[in-house]
Length: 83
Image (tube, one colour):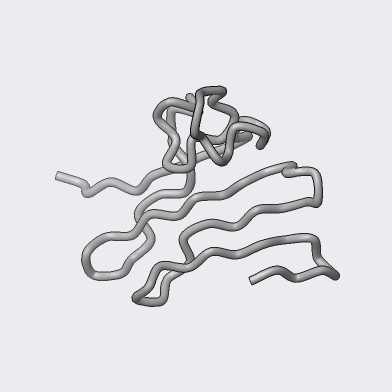
């Protein structure tokens, strides 16, 4: 789903939640979303900020990676259960 006025492209999972948002015509930034089995937000990008650990593999220059031209992630976080 592309929004020309805001220069973003959204991808959603088949069951509804947002999976990825891509910003900018020049592939400026991609945000990847992960959810728990209950549907609660669990993570955005990778907390390690390494392309090989990122859900979308943004900036990882390997053959077959559709997101290799995106900039590496600028931020990431994950929510963990307190014990």
